[in-house]
Image 1 (tube, rainbow, N blue to C red):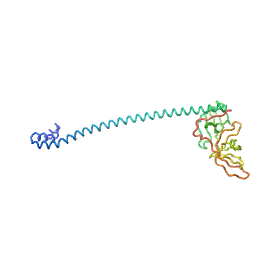
Image 2: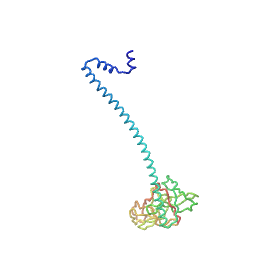
Image 3: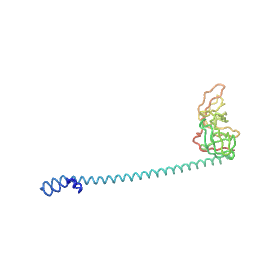
Image 4: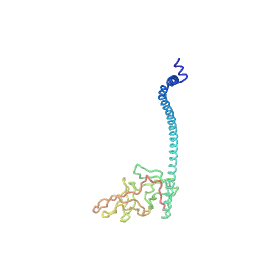
Length: 263
């Protein structure tokens, strides 16, 4: 019954005994009990204070975590917005280059977007979103702008009402009249699996390293359009043509639009 009673009133036994002894015992016993009880009370107060501080710290960490999550979301939104603005800026710069090119050369051009390309044959063909309805016809020259120069990509080989297929100069079936820009030697640019080759350059000719290779005037190709630069040069051979490799000036995977020269 005594245990049940103490549980009901919830008075710890040690404190009950302490009260009885303080009332009935001498001063020396009271001092001893105080020396025991005061540290216990102090410890209890500290524990209560510590638990409150811990709870506050946990709540503060929770608040900071929520704020950080909100800031990360806002940073992501602003980054997307900035990227969108940069894309618009680059597009505007690109359109300005095209307009300047058109005004400078006085050529009739058709701007077309690349719809796709054929990766199975070293990117030998691309599909553009302009066709017969836009005035495109077979054989027309297709270029891009690199800096302030026009760069040859290929020719139109097939047509539809709203699209066309362009054979790139890197295709093995591509043959383009070309010339060494400084040496002024003429030859035929042949597409190869690993790039381009300038054929029919006589063996005694010494091309310069990284010399520009440009187009010769042809039916649908204006002269002087940049093709690429001289790469590996084969050795001289008596009475034979010299092997000259040409590095193309474009990476088709990085292009979005092209220009069809109507002339």
